[in-house]
Image 1 (cartoon, rainbow, N blue to C red):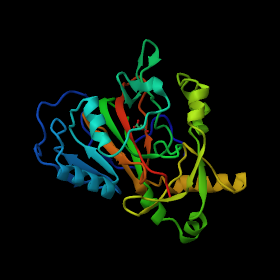
Image 2 (spheres, helix red, strand yellow):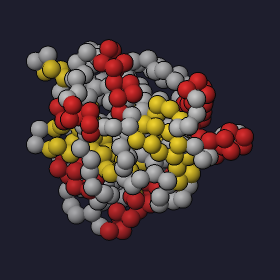
Image 3 (tube, rainbow, N blue to C red):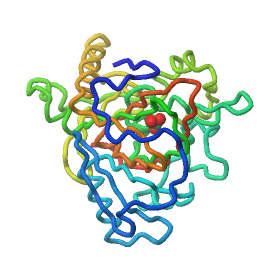
Image 4 (cartoon, rainbow, N blue to C red):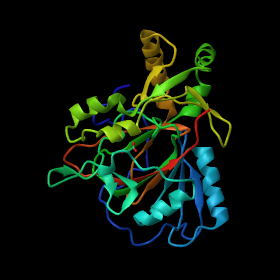
Length: 315
Ligand code: SIN
């Protein structure tokens, strides 16, 4: 599925639109001091209110967040006014962090944070503005793809900039039986470079990769249907951005099957559309969802900090 640089909201319900102006909020929500988890009216996702990372997180609060993440796949932490180091420390509770191959876009002093931004300073991009241009699961091109990612809003545009999440457990469960049988044992190749040249053409600021960077992102092979290592639920694990071919199928058959799967993994009824609010941090499960950045008009500024948690080898 192709996405334009800016996707109009049509089709996917928008939840909780607020003022586009990014300003510190003086007071916490009514849930202050108590963690509140509210499922969203969407095919996935829950809102979490009252997380306070300025104090050590109690084990039972951590367990509730962990459980909610497994149950809802996308958690939206509201009004989370934290430092980059607090985001890193919280992310590390879930596993080791992964460093993105484009080291140019690390936050200064915090290599664990990838800056996702369309802002240019002195003509140079400060972040990877098009990280989410195609549907994908983060770092699926690694032997150990990401468990989950946390994206914390720093600066938001007055228009657009939404992120869409598609539930890949539902995508699998809703496949026609014949297609389930056809894809169940298949494996697919994932490659970081699959769309790199195309993205560079759209966005010439994208750096050329060094031989060392290219060596870091050699193609890998993963099952088309993976089993979630913590819940045992099955999910489709292919995406437009990184999945290049089905192993063992002739090229035309592989292309046709992938195109069909890309369509079925991004149906509107699988999607939660996140409309960012100031100080939101969204934590998604890359084993359960794929995501897409809808884009915003070029002249508006958007900046978020991403941490990426390492997962296990898909099976
Ligand atoms: C990403 O794919 O990690 C970035 C998503 C976004 O920019 O909304």
